[in-house]
Image (cartoon, rainbow, N blue to C red; front, side, top):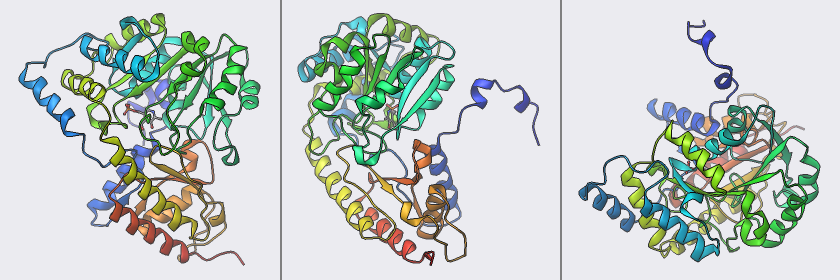
Length: 407
Ligand SMILES: Cc1ncc(COP(=O)(O)O)c(C=O)c1O
């Protein structure tokens, strides 16, 4: 039955989906509270501790009394650390008025959409995409234009597909490298090809979400404006400490881009979240300044976990996975499971059915591909303890061996 509030909710909120990744985590918590053993391979979060030197910086900030409001767009120290990182590591020069720190990359991406979109403006979102992009565009009254990127194209947006998607109302294209959910990483040639198209369409801005920057296996990181400096004045680089430094709970992201846009995002922030937590900002500044020596060990652990997932699942009938280049996800093709029946006789019709079966039968939480705009796939996050991961993959294999194949 509807309560009094349901009928008065704003259309902007009723057109949003509840985050599917948050929903799966909630379902897992509910099953665990019933005493079921469930492993969560659905969560986009590293299991590694935030490095000690970063945690120390937070303690130091508390003791130094850095516990009050800060400048809305970030402390001078954090902004200086962001600017230095972009200059030294990426050869990109930004002024203080061209960078902003916010409460996670998520909040900055939403603010960028709110700051720039008029009703009906279009935003090109290559699929598979991070679950929040289309909803954020809708929340800002824009229209997401989904462009499918096929697995055999390495999950990357091709220049011809970009060209075909651009129309008179296009305001943005969102690029995400390394990518969630596929782990695809854009290299210099791929960026150069996309830049070639974008240079012909000066009304289109680029949101480059590089939040997984440090988590790559082979390719080195390049930022789009490094490859095509003429795009710098219309690129919003979004990054943060959540993924690369295992600081998801600290809630600090940052963005660099044109001064007018950054200024508008700061006004929005001043009337919504205000500054990110003062203590987290001190920690994030230390993270960006202190170097990335710890990442090598993380990458080798992630590589061995990635290899476990790929080898077990590729040996399991019905699954097919290609090797991701970064982040900590494998986007697994489950077309071979459609049409099977569970031991209880239920027909597996789509990737949600696959995810539901794996949760109930194998006790493993994964996210169905439809949540990322592409089916039939499931996303497996391998950012969990290696022994837990191995056992979970084995249970997935055994559960799939129980499926009854169509004759
Ligand atoms: C591609 C992508 N961008 C942004 C975010 C949000 O990052 P943050 O925790 O800094 O808000 C996520 C988190 O899952 C992500 O996967």
